[in-house]
Image (tube, rainbow, N blue to C red; front, top):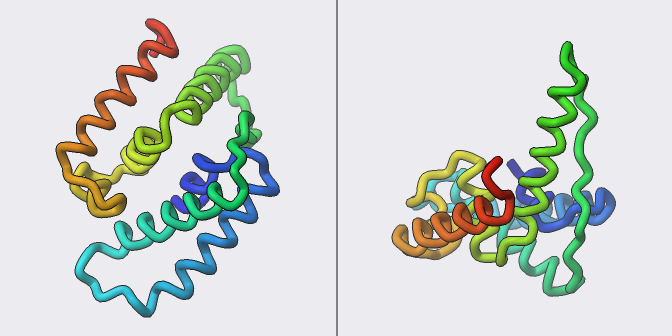
Length: 147
């Protein structure tokens, strides 16, 4: 989860690793403050997103590329290549979303509920639902009918 959150803010491998280390350190420092009022998963996501926003503010740079893993193409290399291209297109489209929508989409893709996303980002559930709906619409429009 932390790697995907870091990757949603930083695509360059070196910077993503730096951000992941900063997130890990922030979690280590913040863990004693966790009182159990929210789930640990929500607490971790909140710390990770806050640290990522701080990182972006300090570096003021958004990367354009996403470093994909190199999985085994399996029995159908052409189908796999097409799927990888669709995945890259989707990830690039997510990266181009406004920050508020991107945060919501990344957490939704991680399997967070609307309530958990709201708790993580300090938003009402309705706001989360609106941002997610707008993001989906923007992704559909940006990716065309194949989305």
